Image 1 (cartoon, rainbow, N blue to C red):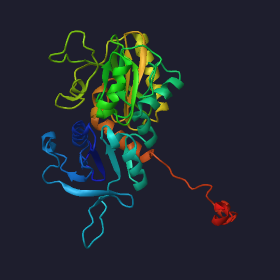
Image 2: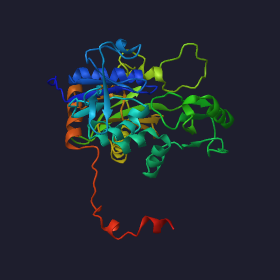
Image 3: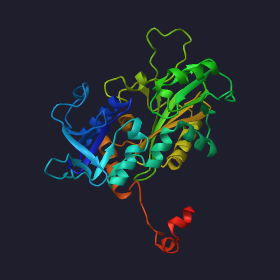
Image 4: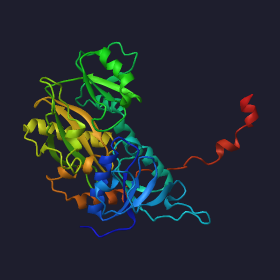
Length: 372
């Protein structure tokens, strides 16, 4: 186990439907890393909390004993300013991001940390934004020639998606399986735009294939490009489900097991034909480069046992996909230590003012003349 460190903090929570799962991932990471804990509440406030807490301490919101802090562009993570003093920096050198969904995984938090000069272990702004936008990611996958199901924008002007039903409708922006529905026809899909709050920011539609099952693999690019074992998540029959009811890997399948994604039922390593396994590894390696993977990501596929389709990339996976690193074996503490090292040695951003030498300003006419 790594030595306790005061300049690294695990960041978790956030105003997201996946807030609770983020708490579990964050506490697991903080316990393994022996780091400080920064909790982002559902209301958007920041607190430093005891890393020894259990998930139950967060059921009612901010746990007892939490200390209010703030995230400022000019000073990073700091104590709240008092009436007579200035904010005091907490001395956080690296933030390990464990915020699933919402502004913690779509590039918003990452952009703020970049501006504040706080290095972080997790996706870059570009990588996070791409991973959270299912339409954009689908276009990148198709443009790279990787196998994928057709995926198009769903809005009230969609008259023909270009493929027959049944359809699967997904939030365009969002993680996990929240807000995903299977419908028989286009009219029902369009109706969901008015009734499902998870689709308010946008939606995509693609063909539903009952014969396909899920396959997942983790990827990291530091200290070298590396892939984990492949898993086949197992779907749990839903109580009261009707015969023939469409099956998808749901939120409960992934997370409702006590330890978040780490306790979800699965077959790992998945029993696959060598040809399919090689195809998964080749596609995952390509996505590691295309999606600007920083930290640890999980690439999700669909397959019928022979054909393969790229589904999505999860840039902050549940439990940071620690359960997948069995071949090659990477202990969770080592996985986290490598993420921290990457944050320090391969920063997520590099701003430059090269070219801003004043030449354009010296030769510019008056502003009034430009507006005339």
